Length: 315
Image (cartoon, rainbow, N blue to C red; front, side):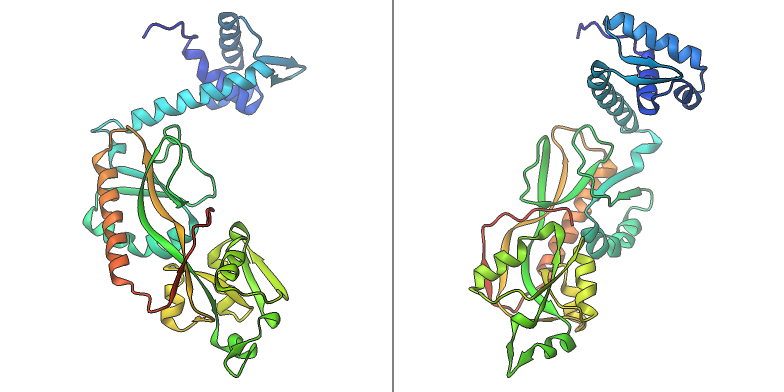
């Protein structure tokens, strides 16, 4: 590949200076002098024939060209660092980095991790449950567990399982809004998940419910919504199988059947056309087997509906 590359040694100085908007802070991070960073950036600007920083008194600020260029530099440096970490035989070869939606991590993955560690004691796991949607192949994560329909750019997806919607409440709360076995929905508080705001509407349309919504309570995760329902704050729209622990314990009960099957589900996602390290492949095989065993074990003795509506969020 014959390309006119800029001075590669100056790219780290440029990225650090852009991040801090300071030559001196960049120099401190890199173990250099501010003068060395300034000279490196001068050389980079001369090579490119364009000004990357505006020198303003004691500070610096990126120009429009600098803002454009730094995005490419960061992607390039991240790719190089990721490639180096993933070289077979390096110590990091036994380290698997996962980006996982919080509800899945808390309710499915974490309780099963001891089993994985027992099978693979030499593999180290790092789990990130932030709401950040990582991008393959530029991100540092090896695998991601996402909720949606399984189609993301530059990624390959394998279905773990789909979900179904079912209204759930504590037995004591349900008794307060039920008379002669019939729920007075106008008295109910609907517990909603902010990122899944269309769930209740989809379920009500599917079952033909036209009751007026009297009150709503919003949370940003499904886990908090279930906790609120257990505490008797209202009726939550549970997602099977994630709400099964509360149903099996009796902390929550089904407020009304049928459940509503939806097209979205949890997917194991990785970069396309990237050679998989043995440690990553071991985790992939283990998780797919765990999901298969879980789905085979779970049976829902409940009437069912299906819907093709779009449900996608970071839970």
